[in-house]
Structures are given as C-alpha cells and as structure tokens.
Length: 146
Image 1 (cartoon, rainbow, N blue to C red):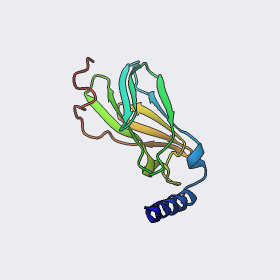
Image 2 (cartoon, helix red, strand yellow):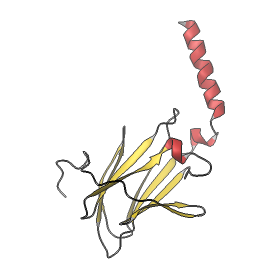
Image 3 (tube, rainbow, N blue to C red):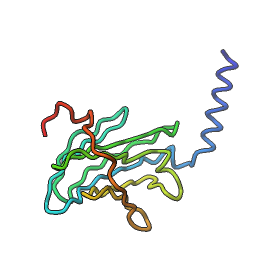
Image 4 (cartoon, one colour):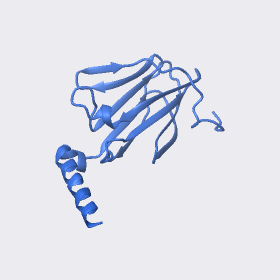
C-alpha cells in the first residue's frame, strides 16, 4: 500500500509541474450573450456533468456568465442548449482540452455570441464563427415548458 501511495504522489507531482501555474489558481469565466437580431428573446440552459447553471431567458444583448476552476484531469466540459422559436440548438461553450490550447483556445475567458446563423467565439484576433450542429430535442428541455 505504501508503494502505491508513493507512485501516486510522484505522478501527481509530475502532472503539477507539467501544467501551467495559472491553471491551479485562476478561475475560468464563460459568458453567453444573445446576439439575435430583431429583439428576439432566447432561452438558454447551460450545464456540465457536475454543475447546472440553470435556465435563463435572455433579451437581445443580454448575457449570463459563470466562473469555475477547470479540472486537474483536463476533462471539464460545459454545454448549452438554446431555443428561440426555430427548434433547439446546442454547443460546447467550454471544452478544457480545446480551450486551453495556445492557438485556438479562449483560455480563462470564453465569450460566445449566439446568432441565428451560428455561435461566435470572441478571440483576440476577431470572431471565430461556427455553423450550428443539427437540430435535436435535448434531454435538458424534455418536460420543460417553453
């Protein structure tokens, strides 16, 4: 048993030195903003495996945001479902493996603009816009009144 504890301690210590120092201390912030045209209100429900941010109704240009500490194991994932009258849309608003990347990631502040044409991530060098995945009826909205 003592041998296993020593191996685990060594692995954790090596992993700690391999991670950037700010990953241990700085919280990550995600912001989701309604950027629909024509004053449309949007229903949004964001969650992770462990945390439910709740259901929110955002007026045009309204937003929600939350902070969290990414997992030591590198597997933190937050996703959101959206509805504004054209069915349901969904995206991963934070995926630790993707968003901690030096070139494509948003690191400690991920700001999404939600548009009818697709979501856009605000980056230092401009917007990265994407197409919506196929429509689906997400389990997060089953049984909820719209």
